[in-house]
Length: 472
Image (cartoon, rainbow, N blue to C red):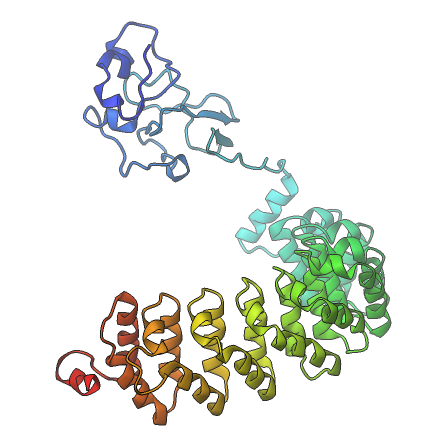
């Protein structure tokens, strides 16, 4: 039997498209024609989707819609043979599963197979049913099944609520059963939340025992997606000795932690919770690798936390190095966030120094994707004197027919800098800035954005009679 591509399906003979019109025995054909080929013969669900990932599964008792592309999808499902009872004539021989409780998945060249479903657990199903009907669950009913609950989404949430607001006897009953499984729960998608609740709400020897388990596995947990959360909670709740024990492990692999997707969160928590003396190893490493860390996807987050601790004497040297390399970092995909953080959280002296470094290249930096955000922050967080210096560079001389302002207004990134300047500038220079904006000889789509912003922020109409005074 000939095979037809989607654009040829409408021209195919009926004997090929509809087996009931052709010779017997063609009920199962390997390739299905496009859905548009059936459009004029019997009802089809609308809309017809272009990609397999967009195709909605047919509801019960609805007609089956063949795939739009020529590649036929095979269905794998459990529960025996289940077919539609009302599939259009000629399609009964096709393997079409009913959309029911059967667990099936679609496979094909453009489909990512689903993860295998968890095996059936009678206790968990009964537990979820009781939660659905808001039935009271006694702690005695859960004994012997705590580990199953801790690794289940709804069971983990239930245990967290009991640990947080329950009685001490319930908390000890849960901990007593999970004590030997803490190491595995820390790296579990749902079990790690139970361990965090234990660290936060248990007291005395039990809490110390959990934190000791964290310390013994600190390096492995720090690099784990879920285990790093338990390490952070231990740093937040633990005493000075316990924190120092964790730091002694992290100190050995600080370079790896900086560039790790998960361990960098542990270093951030160290900066937030610990004293300057305890994180001296991290500050020393950051001072000798300012540019490397600032331009790294995860290292830039640590630099931002250090900038927030600008009162620490050791952080002052790091901020100074950031300011010296402000032009370079502002143009980087990740480094620009570090410079923005200095402008937002740094001291007034730091802000003035950053603006002094960037002022000479104001127009160039405003026209770039990443550095334009830094220039916007300069206008937003700078002191009035520093902001006026930036405006002087933008406006140029009165005799200039094409000042830097016009070049910025016509650019797809720099026009946002002009809009921010209009928003934050005070009355003395605001009128001169608006007058210069409307005096631009030619305009494009980006200058129109500036006009709209000025009209919205300053209540100045740029059309009609009110437009004329600003054209002089």
